[in-house]
Image 1 (cartoon, rainbow, N blue to C red):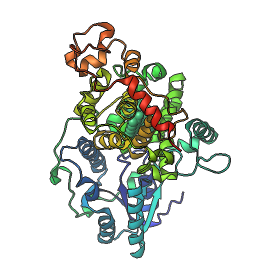
Image 2 (image 1 turned 30 degrees about the horizontal axis):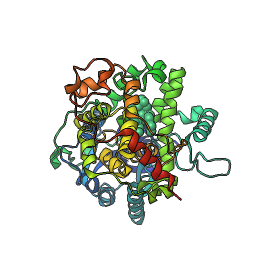
Image 3 (image 1 turned 45 degrees about the vertical axis):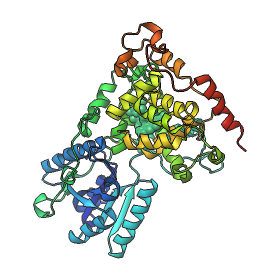
Image 4 (image 1 turned 90 degrees about the vertical axis):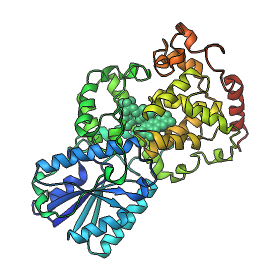
Length: 461
Ligand SMILES: Cc1cc2nc3c(=O)[nH]c(=O)nc-3n(C[C@H](O)[C@H](O)[C@H](O)COP(=O)(O)OP(=O)(O)OC[C@H]3O[C@@H](n4cnc5c(N)ncnc54)[C@H](O)[C@@H]3O)c2cc1C
């Protein structure tokens, strides 16, 4: 890389990369410019629709505070503004007389449109817009099948992903350390920063610790049990997973750092964990190449399905009052915390679609509004997989039985006891199948509903 900076002044627009270490846009900007100012826009198009008690806002604000503190220590600062980024970024570029704006790629439909608009406006004012891959190892069309087409099923995609990753591992695991000496001196910036709190948001308790330091600690602690990940990851009562999804989502940790860590702690468990990180990239690739999934079924014929479920059953599902202990425990934890274990996400999603016979989009939206780690691609992929409308290699007649899932993955009922306290006195297996006088009656009959669900798919043309 050239040592002579190309630009005198530049902005780094942070979005899904809320950290200072191994940060691609900051790396590129600080190596190509003499003075770099990191900026975060509280996007009015997004946040004005959120509840003032949205837990994710607390995570973002606190993570931004940590970024600001880090920049402050280097004599620079983080500028936080509120408004429509399509106006705010060009406006700031003009005021601060920058020649370039650096950022990281984001391929969600809204983000793509937003970035195209910003790039166009900047260009008309003679300001360059540079966007880089940061949040995944492989994006868009980088992993294609032998015919040059995007994959539609996971396993061959994953095999090819691993092959390409291994063939240039050092390149893919590169640590993009910014040149801190190129940060813009805080004393030269007059602009005032705002915060989510100034826009009426209220700080919430969240079960995931915030900021990059916390993410690094989670990763470090995970070293103690990653080798047992493949055995422990399916049991909600055990902390067998990394709990890093929210950090990966908001970029308080880099995906390369996660994979460097995996590479240094190789074991059977680590290989399974890497597969999970590949699932995330798989779903991002699906959203990029098959954008219709955002609104419709991946398997288009599934849009013919008229889901016959009852609206009141959706309310029972949301409230954790279905009469199925494992479903109720998962939904109550989710309502109280915004967190749900992966196994339970699959179980409750399949229950909503195959037992309550409700449209997957209803559950997808409820998750999108409330999941701490909500990510459009992963959430949509997870829901469509569970509803059998998506990229699942298994046929539609796979329907998870909530009772056997409960017996298998919460065998001693520890998880259910915690979240459904009215069942805590039941001993042994009884907790999975309480009698009507011990708990509320199940709102549906699993064996009957399962057959109706299978029939909905059989009829498809
Ligand atoms: C219906 C449904 C909805 C989901 N919605 C989301 C979502 O909005 N955001 C989200 O990050 N994950 C989502 N997932 C995937 C998964 O449940 C979470 O990533 C996982 O529970 C997070 O816990 P962890 O960080 O401890 O994961 P770990 O088991 O430690 O896995 C490591 C990382 O791999 C990624 N990952 C793991 N499993 C998956 C998966 N199946 N699909 C995609 N990425 C995965 C996550 O980034 C995760 O942090 C969803 C799954 C289902 C079935």
